[in-house]
Amino acid sequence: MARREREILSGGCETASVGVSERFIAGLPKVELHVHHVGSVPLRAVAELAARHPGTVPSDLDQLARFFVFEDFPHFIRNYLAVVALIKTAEDVRLPPLALHRFLTVCTRCNLCRPHATYVYVGCDTGA
Image 1 (tube, rainbow, N blue to C red):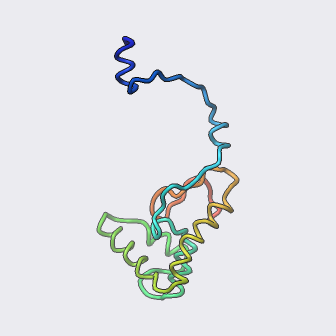
Image 2 (cartoon, rainbow, N blue to C red; image 1 turned 30 degrees about the vertical axis):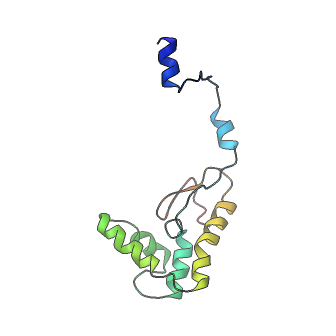
Image 3 (cartoon, one colour; image 1 turned 120 degrees about the vertical axis):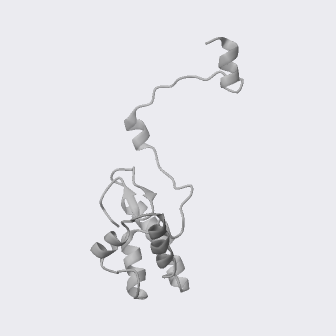
């Protein structure tokens, strides 16, 4: 590739290639830049909300895990709205971010845990 083509593709700046190991990246501190209030609630916190406000959402962890196996997008929306409806009090509003903070703070052994999708956590099985 000609120098001018490289300049155009790089926005006019030359870039350097730096080798970085997976171990180095895994050891870097991680930060959550954006999480959804309800979409990032750990299962145990959803179970706690469901126990506080019995009804559509199961409070049993095994049943709750099955509750979040979605058949299609409308099913996802129905279940998502059912969980949203569990947030009724000031304490309910505080629970999701505190539970997520607790999960991410406790779950440090792999330094890779992160909310991946609604109610699914990738990286380890602590379930904090």
